[in-house]
Length: 379
Image 1 (cartoon, rainbow, N blue to C red):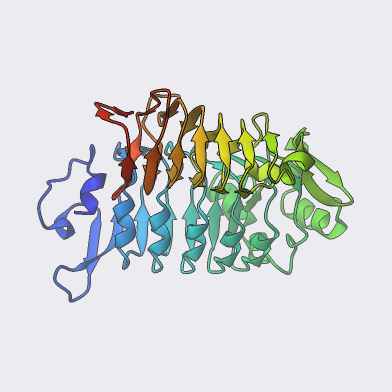
Image 2 (cartoon, rainbow, N blue to C red; image 1 turned 60 degrees about the vertical axis):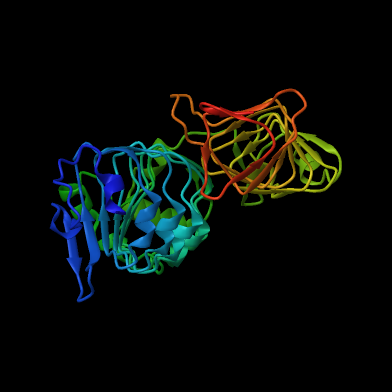
């Protein structure tokens, strides 16, 4: 039943024996057998990647390259601890790269290239020390490159080009930490049509460290020519910081009001709103614990909000859990009209102005107390 979520335009002859379907490999002596491989490349698959795939704990290969898949990458895929290949390249996936994917320590091939992913590269990807290829190029990733990627000593190929990464390239990028990259330059150029086995082009990156500069110039001499300046990152004492407005106010606002003016909570370094605090016009792009009040917020696809009160108008493309609603509306549709936002847990609808939840997904076992349900919205 898990695999049925991937049928879409697959032309599978759907039966109750998925192990007989094209592109599915099963193994083991159990009844039913365990699915170990799913390989459906260029099959015009549409829709979201089903979260139930995270139940296939014996899965070793998941290849959905070159389809039309949308939505976010399910967090539950972090359960697939036997996975060696995860290939989602050339789709239309949105949202962030969840830290749970850093649990897949058997991964050797990991590609999310050419999607619409946003947010930062998780530090936890540095735990995937069996990786031979890490390909994240062609997305909208921001922030600095984690120094922990220098732990990936078995890497043959690292492609981070064509994103919006900024700041100093980590000092961990050197010959001692990433020796295999040198041996695979020619293969990357001749067989993979890449500029090198390490590609950083078309970002906002720099380095002031001589060893890193020498390493990069030897492995990919043209890397620096394609970097552009960015107003979002500056270098202060060789340490990259993100430039924002009202950082001090919002970072220490406690029980005061903080107007984020459209900044992300990652940039403002906010992970909690304290009791009595009011966070206004913020973009929630990571996990936020709310013990106060949120007003006019936008929850990005990778954002998770838990607790507190929500007022005014809210756009939710991520996850909102266990809160009291006292506002005008929470809408879960993105700019394309796709319903992507989710509500979960226990929600108290105490709006005094006939507020509504519109075009929103409800997670299993969600309880909404108060209001009435009408068609595709709840009020």
